[in-house]
Image 1: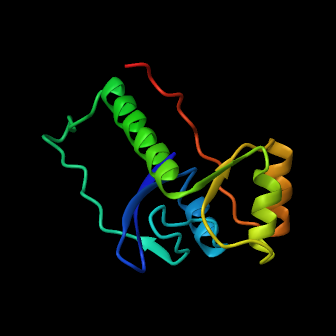
Image 2: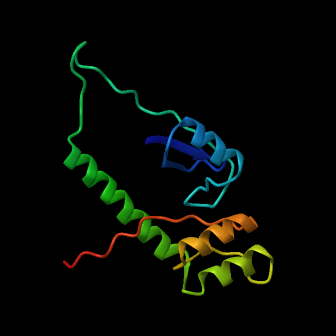
Length: 140
């Protein structure tokens, strides 16, 4: 897996994970990469901080637990952003996504549940969908 800092045409910067560089190129070319803030499909790689070596034999490394914590934090932030900015449509997600795609419903961000098969069918129809890992809420 590889992570890139991306920038949309409106200047929003966000991170995205890809299998490899070719996967990034394919997904951008087919419009599958969306800015999580404004939904723009016009994205490009942003400048990223380099990995700085302390010596020839040792690099600065973040422990696996720290990296997992960072990823968990990002996923929590993503969930909060989606909940704050999109409409929850539950199990009606596939139908509502199609209505929006075909202009039968107001264009807006939605989220909900769907099966793997239904998500694939939506993608095959050209309906822009993105499956995201949804962390359960933690009890405080």
